[in-house]
Length: 513
Image 1 (cartoon, helix red, strand yellow):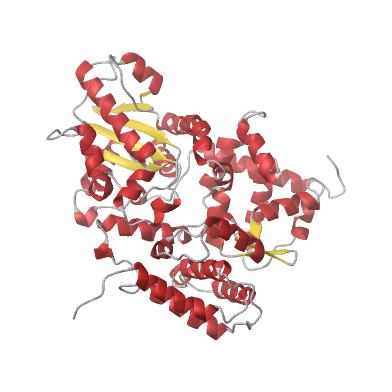
Image 2 (cartoon, rainbow, N blue to C red):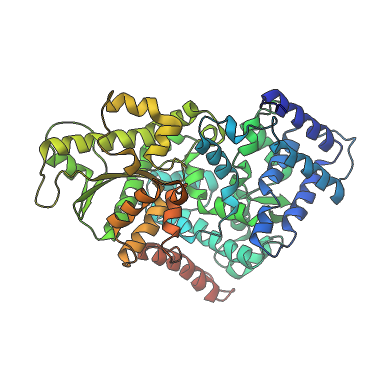
């Protein structure tokens, strides 16, 4: 029996059937049904995932983008009709409608799409990511561009944002189904007036009409592409629904992810390249703090460059332990939208040219120069055992160097290695990991749970074999057998933020500052 291959036409045809169905219903009733569906209590976390929230948000996006959004000849949708509509969304995953795993150039390309689509719904609130934003941005000088830009964009100072976010988080963790009203913040209204609190809540929310206008700016209202099926929902930027003076949580995990990276996303989104030109040094300093926490001998970029003969790029850090050299490069980036949803290796490669590719080039160059020189000092010298860790702000899902080479970067890496030559650092010894992974790793090393170089060696060994191979570095960390930990500097920052809240709550409501 022959099977039909994927085509954009088949996907668009399936979309039109769904569109013609949801056009019967008033958009705000579809949104209300979606909220009710997502809030239905479940006993297991896996049951929450089986609601397929990514499909719910894709449906809502299409409803809001529809050119007949404001037509009046519509009726309210029933709960049964909503489930029928959602069933049609599930059908989008069928053969010929969306691209099957076998229709990708490499299996990891499909796994990447699935990861961006679904992984955000699989993790509780990450206090480390939240505290890291405070360390990165709220510790900057008072006149720093990022401080000024954030306050201009939000009308709220950074410190106030973290305090109000912490209070909102406490509400969500205790009860994520009840609507949020400004009055809930009454215990701290001696510090924040109602207009400030409303501005804060409005930052995280849109009403349906405003959400429609935002989506129209980001999308063509008529063109629907199969890649949308795998997208990381755009609702991340506005995880609350504003309605009649109250605020409703779309989904608790959506709220978690939005809050964890809100400052970074707010500063980056207007001008990503301009942001990165300023953020790179800030991010490198943060990674430096994590590397210091390891307690191992290391050099920084300027020290490496000063000691090496000749010219060329070098990595940001150079660590040595047990005769092995580990080079670390900090790239404070995230993957652009097209790089998350695309199946095409060349698209993904293009989106990481200034991060992954540049990091690999720098690692190769410093090893070549070090090999030619041999000895820098009594501690740092050339080695036959070399590793490269490329640390990013958010997950790129590139795996290790061999994975990246096989799925997207073969021609590019071959071009600067040279025909018939072996890479200065074996590709299997290269890893892409997030700063969150690095902090967890540093914590485990600092507490004596693992040895830094032995852990990396084991990860490389495990990834050579199918049964032990991992999709990304975090899975190696999860095997340590201890819960995810955080370095003391992150714990201290969490305590500092919540300590300020406790102080505010201890002040009588009649007091003024």
